[in-house]
Amino acid sequence: MALTRVDPLPETRAMLAERRYADAADYLGFFMDYEYISQNPEAQSLYREISEERKSWRYQLNKLGEGLRSGISDEAIGQAAGVATDFFVIGDIRDLAKQGVNLAQGEEIDEILVALATLGVLATTAQVASGVGTVGTGGMTAPAVVGATIAKSGLSALKKANKLGKLPSWLGETIIKEAKVAKQSKSLGALANLLGDVNTLAKTRGGFELMGQAKNAADLRRMAEFANIFGSQSITIYRIGGHVAVDVAQRSEKLGKETIKLATTFGRGGLELLDDIGVLKFTKFTSRSTKMAYKGDFFNLLARFLLMVPKWLLYLFIIFGAVAWIPRRMLSAVSKQPYLNFQKLSKRQIA
Image (cartoon, rainbow, N blue to C red; front, side, top):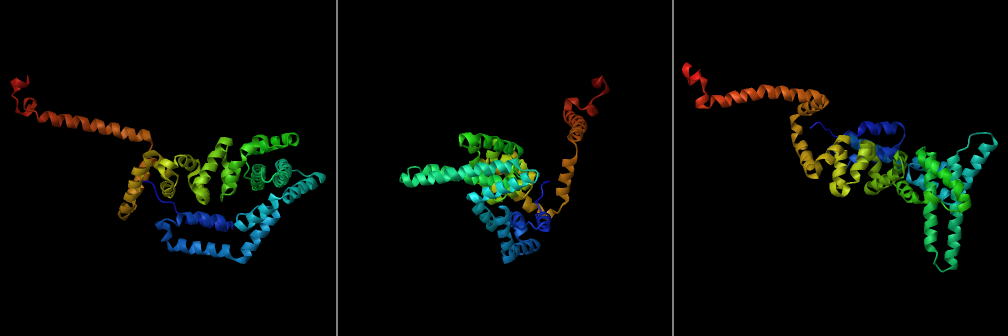
């Protein structure tokens, strides 16, 4: 009863104030699937405003230039431009040249970016060599081309994560270490095992933010599985539920994808409640909560207040209640027994 539905409008407006139209569209769009928001005139107007801005040619042209200049963007057109430059060796040469200029001028260089660009050149070389081999062998080495392509796209994704400041420190250390080894071994080593998960997150909107929250390789795998389940809605669910959402998603086959999304509209507490009581009870709870809405906010406020009361104080109330209730019940039971009814006994019998 203490749970309330999330109001997405304040967070959406905060995103718009920072001109994060793509993030705002995803965040508000998630809630537009639910009647309590989709029927809200203010939400409808805000959603139209965001959609019109994203469709404008000025906005699209700006995002295209953003992708070409820096290789990163939050919109599809800018991301495509960034991939086009990074996927070929052009992007790696551009980054190496930029870091070379910084070194010549005595400025700080980005070791991770240098390592990624170096690995990217090696992956491009392997990609070209595999392609030539495929032509020469009539397609027998095609799997090698696929492997080199996956490696190249994964390295491009890591480069974008680094530029966005979303690359976790443990992964940055792994990249630098493997780049030094790769010069002799001509392979990606331990990094190759992570690139599949990296690619999964890279193709998911908001995936780089999820990547930045991973604490180790196992956590990166969990984030990738989470992104696989919820796709473009992953980042919105994570922003609301945090790691609780990722934990609950690991049991999505049991709890159900749509039920998890419904629980998200009640905030982190909704996800915790779903995980605690299961699908059937949670579904009954949500159906009852809509029917109780006419009673107003009193019960909701009362439930919130009780949640704020310390547990020790609640237990104290229970003990006092038991002390007050048990003697009264005992006396009531005793008075109903004829042989123990003191009012009907003589003084001699009582003695």
